[in-house]
Length: 222
Image (cartoon, rainbow, N blue to C red; front, side, top):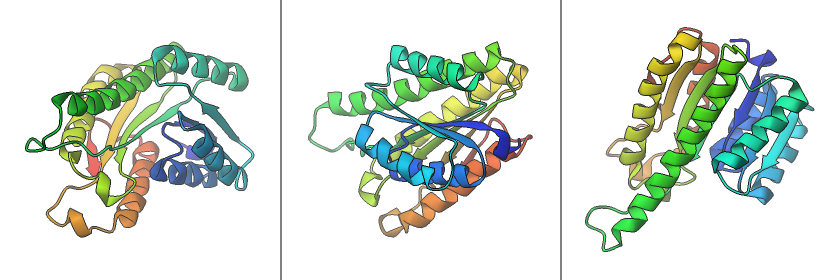
């Protein structure tokens, strides 16, 4: 895929990785659409991107529910007369309680359910629009973290991203829509890992998946 002529939608654009992904794809010449429920952080990302490119648009969302996402994509379609051909489904990991933690089970369920529901809804709605417009698109599910303190429980989120990526690829391959995944590598040294370097590798892997026409159904670790 020619990134320079693509319309790229990035979720959680106010996050550390989301903002850096936005800057990276803006530098590559793509038209970049940003969204997030953190309106202040989103505006900061938009301003940084506009220093690089004039092809930036930002959408503050009240929530990640279906009506909010549909309304945003309706406006994108009106403005660009097309739909995003790249969805970077970026979700920062929220530290999840361990099995031995003395915390209510509901906290774990709520955090994981919110991430799963939000990621799935964006994937479903965007792929539906791509199919409607016969768009040869790509979805990249990206799991990141803003600091090493967000690492606990990342194995659970990684498994979810891997499962989504593989099943969506099977569903969408007949429609010429590719699906890939990018997750942080889990190792015994994660406590002292240089997480900024990990995020740089996540960005390189994301670009590789978008650009490589033969990549689909697999997850890359950084």
